[in-house]
View: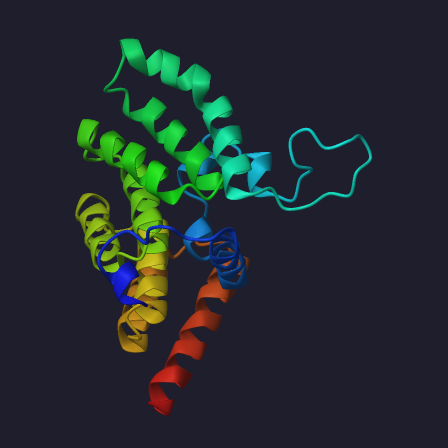
Length: 218
């Protein structure tokens, strides 16, 4: 990654760069979004703003197009309004903070999302789902070291957490170019989750095989 990204938070990204990152997330299939779904599985759906949509104010029937980052920020702010209102009277509600973070994450506002996820884990350090989402946003912002630290912290609370182990492998492989480390994380995932659904188990096994090939080619 560029030096700017490695410094912590990649600032001043153009829309094309963020869309490219979103495409990478989809390419991972499940990567930091994730294979097993994390806190989003608890009743919070990804915002439509993260999907292809007509820009605000576009005529009815106009061709759909990817909204700009500013459009997505406005959509996220609007969607988050009722939750932010609740937080004024309950600022340390980890679940609410997590939901706000998910809204901003879904609209690719990763820095804003990370802020809310950080508050969520500060309020409840054992909120593993929020911590895993925080790690994802840190990775998207270019801070893979802190992302790994957060995942390791998650695993200190729940060593079997499939999301944390899966994402740890992805970050080790994609950001750290450490296929051996990725394989270790994914093998641990399979070992500690013997009742994993067959399709998810097959996906992890495929990734392990691919990582081993990368290691052999080094």
